[in-house]
Image (tube, rainbow, N blue to C red; front, side, top):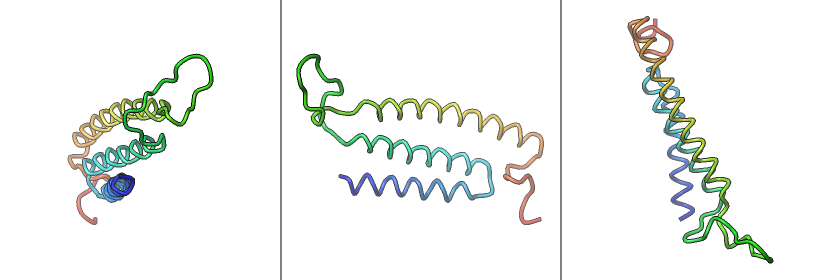
Length: 114
């Protein structure tokens, strides 16, 4: 399971980085989204993968914290999802405005290698 998760994180990060280096704005935005998905999976995997483990420890007495899921990475990923959604919406608005002003969707504002 860890190999599959590591491969997924690596593929998402590599694809996102490759798309960030593309000349068109939409490809850059998709690359940022893929990179944020890779980071979210990485943060989520740092909380250790537990299947069926309760996230909250009961009150009283000594409890073994290794049998409970860590809620901090889950909260961080949830916050990161909300922030990346807002950032993507902002980037799309800026991309549409830039397309209207310049008439092109290239990152540097000009077509080809001029």
